[in-house]
Image 1 (cartoon, one colour):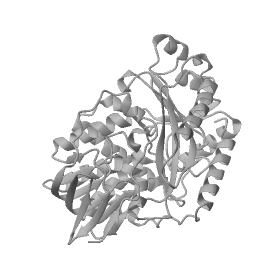
Image 2 (cartoon, rainbow, N blue to C red):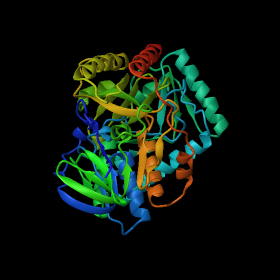
Image 3 (cartoon, rainbow, N blue to C red):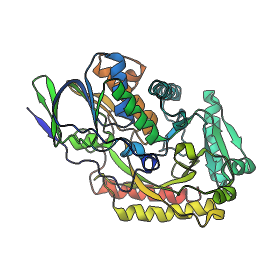
Length: 446
């Protein structure tokens, strides 16, 4: 048996706030002993759970197991901003316009959103965790407003709806005078990511899928035609295996030197009391992405999603070791505080309850790794910072490949090139972080 040992296991800094603001979870079930299944999935985030659901749809009688190194919604899936975006959202561009076949991208993104919506209904997930209210690209400067106008022109060519909002409309929405204007697009769904992932896991368990938490896979290898997965306390034999562990695909030796590991940082306020809400004003729920992709993302949620809170997300750090320090989280939190006060000076007395880092996996050429890596071994990884939609799509695609089912999703991802190779270290780290700092400096007001 040729084994692949995990070089690293996930290490998270700060709490997964989206999960922390919800009621506690039941005690986890961890893998103990030996189990034989038809399909095993490593990773219980958007990709892994979507893969499990699609496997169940295509193989109603199959034995399926999902393993996660931690608790549901306390890894990357509980550390994002909760935007499930349907339109082109290229983080490497100046205005999010895509560089490929945007009609296909939009169609696939909407397929992912429909898949998620159907899961919400089937699994009885709280509808407050899946709000189809759209989002706004907020602009502070004239340059950022020009980005919005450029993106609007791009969307018009695609036949997609968009609406420009002026300063007064932005104030009525957000309670902040900070924004010069905004661009509203209606197709984005704002999710409570932890609530969604938890409910998804519960639904899968009701369908007979085994979901094991606190069960890190430390080694995989072939035993005859099957795959053998080892955890600290158990072992699974699987006819087919899906890696849905995003950047930790590299930890098992795949796509090494081709994946960019970037961390984004976020902060969340305490639950705002009635006095703070009166000073804040604005709508109860909204999501603002910056017109410049390297600006600051803001979200407001309400009691049905875990409290009346504001989330601030900005600052990026390239870390090929897939770990960031507590000091990096603290430095980012200081910047978040300034960004928050720029927008809400009337809330100067409101502090921060949660601060955290979230791991993104990107490729230089913007492709994912959704394919058969070895016989019976499939990948649903490298989401390029679009984990809610892209993760859902790659999970569906990997499940379809593993089931011998061809679709528009499988054809799209199989046709993609390999991720472009990165420069050697330390050039990659130095160059990437210098570029990120420059982009953040350019987008400072945003």
